[in-house]
Length: 334
Ligand code: SF4
Image (cartoon, rainbow, N blue to C red; front, side, top):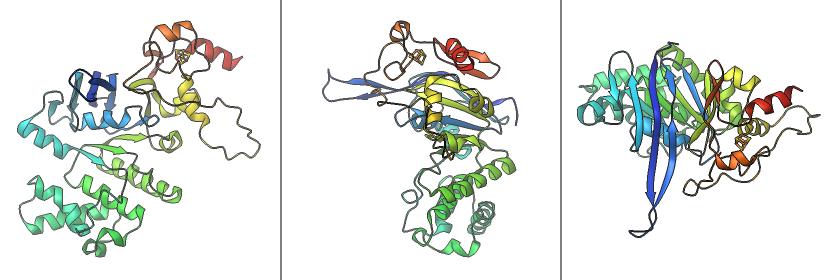
């Protein structure tokens, strides 16, 4: 893993106008002031509940939704792109370098195309290969990397299980030779027994091909063994960000701790004394003032309702956005 960021954002925001008539439009702040560095060759996790903005962040970095404000840059050592202004032939080139693995392996694959044609489609659409032989050779190479049986390339997706379909989706994402992959809840739709298999495949492909992953998940237990670094999002903002081991050993933010408490324990004596997350994430169109988490936080005080906390460094590589993280950490130790 390199220290140089492949993706670097500063105060990145994504907004959508929603609502009916001319004067009733509301602004939905899906991503609000995100600053992250994703090092080249890393597996970067983004975690949060549904509605936290993690999917929109991934799509903004793929240029699939417009960026409202802030900076976003891509630098793979060969090319550098400003993602806020990227267009024309450079955007076409970026599409080869940045790809998405979808969540639902059943909906992502056309039932009318063979596995070979599904994997080959990006090569043909992007004009990467010129002849059928060239395309077939590249499809076979990627199918083998994704541990797909070459005999299966002539079959249709309905003949495969969820795990096998996800391997086909992964092969399709990899075939253009990308450097950056956004994997959005890529194992959420799979059985637990298959999840580990697909996660191991993603990790080995990432190492072997030197790729950079943004791995989006609602489930902290899924990112535990996969990601090098995890950013926790709540209502469009990062509330905590740390190397994975550090986050798991020493989470500081009440929201992160609540997400940990939602992981089922295998210990039959564990009566669940950890903090539980209650209520629902507020609407992004009607965000509470101050700390966005104060409506659900058991430690909220007056300042939390008035002032939004900044994202401060508490240890090297570990940042937290909470007015009271120090007192809460001392209490936990006492
Ligand atoms: Fe809870 Fe206040 Fe910290 Fe927000 S700033 S997480 S409301 S203690």
